[in-house]
Image (cartoon, rainbow, N blue to C red; front, side):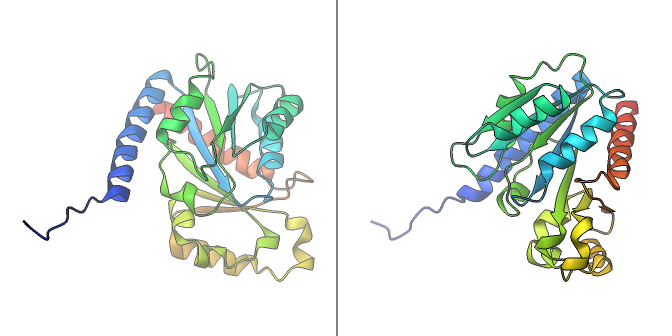
Length: 225
């Protein structure tokens, strides 16, 4: 008889398996010529409004579809489709606070990928769980809104360390909040020196062209690789 107990590193195993799935999904999408963007943020940061503005600027230049991930409802998918006319699929996570590569693949199974250049995945609103799981995306983007505060990169380091671009939304309310844009930029670059920081106002459209241009350039460069 032994007192030894077998210890299984479940979290490590889950992450390793997901990374394999994500790499396989990326390779498949590369063969199809479809660029996948993973867009993350807190609830209420303005992801859907930013998407509508961005799609409006790009839909004549890129063939796109959107996947909206939420715990429940189809509000955002309907809003995207009605506002932009592009294909939009709603993903329900069954209570999960994130998407992983396999869940993303299941969503993509319901998207007509042939002929598309870009699929945008609007991840579940959360600054913790989505950052831990590779979805198989080519690039990661996140939206931070002014009311959330400029210190979020200090509080949620992983989220900001994995993002290629940080969009700071709701710049129109900057005078009413104690938000230091330069401090925020500094904190973002503490986590990820290569991350681009783009201030916008999705409500008015100010600055959205910069984000749209970044995304279009990334898609074109990726297609040429």
